[in-house]
Image (cartoon, rainbow, N blue to C red; front, side, top):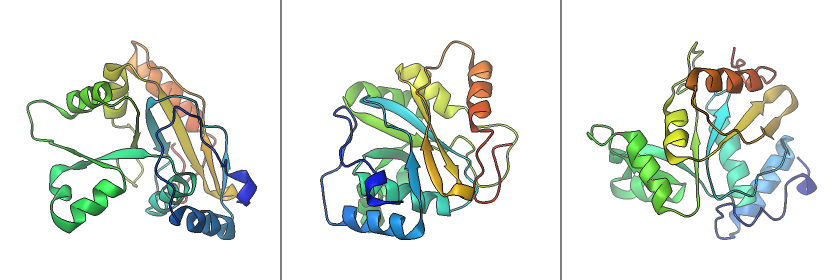
Length: 198
């Protein structure tokens, strides 16, 4: 990844982190390791970002480096217990949002309400839910986007070319099954570290 291949400025509507010295270090690491970013981020303030194929813990490393290098504020969900004590500070700093999984007020409702409260929110989710091969994706990301009336941004890992790619915005419709198939078809050409979406 050349220094020029990463945008110096994000679209105005994108949630952004404050500039810090780690941004330059992250750019340097990505350049040395040969990773590049393909595609453009949309000028949208609220969306659900999905990333696949998720076949290695390295996905989180490269994804976090791109996030830091660009200064883009992408949040993720975590169980409330992770946010207690010193670890909680770190998880929040990295973009974690605590959710109460045992609540009668479900995760979808919690997150859709958060979208209403926050004028800018990009929520990142791995639809496979695990690094192991799966035949079916978890559907929470679709339900959250549908309930919050926000688009879905597909992002892919393609390890053969050391690429993280940004796909076109997708607006969920009334047919969840058709929407999921459409998104899985989008991911078909891309190969993660250990497998493709399949």
